[in-house]
Image (cartoon, rainbow, N blue to C red; front, side):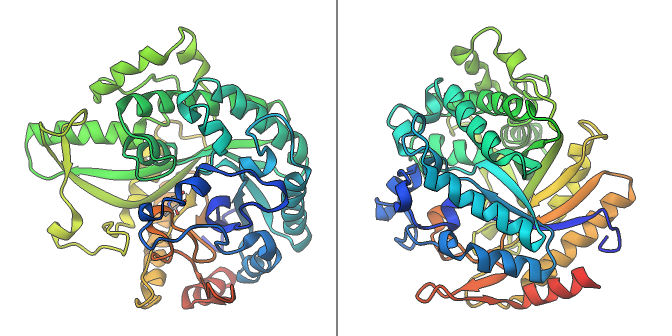
Length: 434
Ligand code: NOJ
């Protein structure tokens, strides 16, 4: 597909994982700045106050992406850098920073893509209930309008919410990500509100002609442990949760409550017209998949009645994340999501593998080679796949896992902040240019 001129290669990064400069030039605290203060929440007791220092090193990173031959640079905006209070007064230094990033991308010939939300809600909004407070729909729409008015003259591709199920599941149900909330009420209300917010954000962006606006979905292949009815139903529940909840309400299909009965409680947070409001016609879908889960029915697990059979118990290859290495998911999800609407372009808007410091980077090359072959086979079936964005450029702050897993094709010396291309970056450069 590198021979196919329309096929694009790019990279994805996010603000909270890379920028650092957490309190510089008027930026407000995000929920991750607060969450990481509880050091025990992060595996290596680290935080993202400096991270990769993208705030100061953006030129170097963008140059590197260009040198490798990447054509798309997808980055996210820190809401609290633009609006330190979450709404109200705009921080001009924040606006200016992303102007510099966008302009530099254009200057050196790489296309900037914006993600509006990659998990770093302003703390001030969390203090008012965050995603559990329905007012967040307006806060988000106002924020997106500011981004549109400042950046949409130069940025054509926009991704609204990145992996909603992960940030709501880990942040508002399990409490293992910021803001560390737990429980079914927090989860269901935050899910409904972030979906509504995404729908409103879509309309706000589409007021400007010519924009391509999509969403980025976390996708995990779910399979049954045993060949029983009970396990198959368990698969359906988790599949509805992980792979359908963040797309089907937008497509006018409603919440997948038939397979996941706990969702029947969502109407508690509805207004009547909400199901209609949720409908949007995304210009494209971003697929992001890393692993597969094998599950079995477990009556004693609240709300879901499902247990995961851990990869370690199944003797399969796992990454340092503890995830089964499963590049085959790319093929499965590209094919599956193309059936929603075969006309709509699909992107692999993230894809990659985490390695430890000690592992040979050849593993990453092998992983990407498999993804490429699988994507080719999907495209051979006539499915409209537009490109692959790697996760990620420089090793960065992997949320609650700290800096232990390395997802980058470029390594980072955290003392000197020096970057160095790994074998995989050199291989990719050659592959793209061939
Ligand atoms: C998905 C998320 O969007 C990103 O922030 C994260 O680092 C990678 N997956 C790897 O876990």
